[in-house]
Image (tube, rainbow, N blue to C red; front, side, top):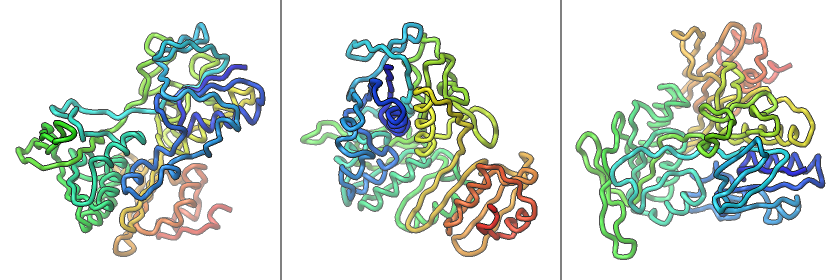
Amino acid sequence: MRYCIVGNSAAGVWAAEAIRALDGNGRIDIFSEENYPAYARCLTSYYLTGTMKDEQMLIRPPDFYETYDLHLHKGEKVVQVQPDRQELYTRSEKRFAYDKLLLATGASPVLPEIPGRHLKGVFPLRTWADAKGILAYAGPGKRAVVVGGGFVSLKAAYALLQAGLSVTCIISSGSVLSQMLDREAAAMVAGVLAAHGLEIKYRTDVAAVTGRMDSVRGEVVGGVQLNTGEELPADVLIIGKGVAPNVDFLAGSGIETGQGILVNEFLQTNYADVYAAGDVALGYDLISGQRRINAIWPNAADQGTAAGKNMAGIPTVYSGSLGMNSADFYGLSVIAAGWAKGEQDQGYEVVRLYPGKNLYRKFVFQDDHLVGYILAGKTAQAGILTALVREQIPLGKMKEELKQGSIRPRFLW
C-alpha cells in the first residue's frame, strides 16, 4: 500500500503514526513545503520571547522519521493532485503515485494589500520561519506594531512585551479576541495587557507601511500610517488578520472544496481514497451541526489519527469537532469553548456571573444542555464544563447549580 500525506504538522504526523501502527509494511511519503521536521506551530508565539530553544519546538525526536520508516520530503510543495489517476505533483516537477492520500495542508495567513507590506521586517506569524524572522528584527527596547487583535496577534504582542519591546496593537474591531470572547472577558484581558504596557488602538487600520534605510539590510520597515492620519514608528511589523485554508492547489482536481475541503464522518472527500484533516478539513461542528473548521491543535491531531486509521482499513468515525481556545496573560487565564458567544437575542439562555475581581463566568444554555462557556480568572474546572458541552449531557438539576456558579465533578456521574 502506498500512502501519501501532504502536510507535516499535527494532522499529518498523527495520521502517519496511526497508519504505521496498523500497517507495518506500506510506504508512507510525507510532503512539507517547509524545511523543518515536525514542530509545534502553536508554540510560535512563545518562541518570540527568545527563551525557547529550537529543540523545544519539535514534537517528535530527531529519529522519528527513521524509526517509523517515513519518507519526509522537506521543501517539497505539492502543487497539483489528480485523483482520477491517483497521482500528485510537486513544485520540483516530481510525480508520486498513491493508493491512499491525506490532505493536511493547513492554512496560510491572509495578508491585506497594504502599501509597503513587502518591506523587510514585515511578517505574518504562522510558521517557525516567521518567528525566526521576527526575532531577527526584535529585541529589548525595539518598537513593534501588531496588526490584528485575534488569538495569534495578541499572543505575539504578549510575547514581544515579555521580550522587552514596546508594543502597539492596531485592531479594526472594538475589542480584543473578538472571535473567542465576549466584550466582558475581552475587556479584562485588554485591561491586564494595558497595565503591563501594551498600547491598543481600536477601530483603526493600517493604511500604509513606511520604510527607512538600514546600512546592512537595505530598506526596512520604519513605521506605519494609520487610517486616522497618525504615524507610528516600528522596527518590526506583524500582520495577523486571519488565515485561509490551503486549497488553491486543488483547483480543477474534482475534489470538492468550500471554505476548506469537504469531508464526511470518515474524513473522506468525494473521492473514497482521498482524505483531509486538520485546519483544511471542513467537517462538522459538534454544537451547531454545521460545517465548520475549528482550527486548534487537539482537533487536528484527533482528525489525523482518525484519518490514518481509515486509510489503513479500520473504519473510524470522527463525529465532529468542538471550538475551543485558551490563553494566559500575566496570570489572567481565559478559556472559551463551544458556542461561547451565543446571546439571548439568538435564542439561547445566557447567564453571566462576576464572583470577584478579574473573575468572570458566562454560561450559554440551549434547553437542558450547556452549549458554550467562557471562564476568565480561575479556569481549573474548565475540563468539566468542556465535557458537558462536548457530550451534550442533559443537565437536569445541575443547570440551576451551574447558574449559581457551582461546578462540581459529580456532575459527570
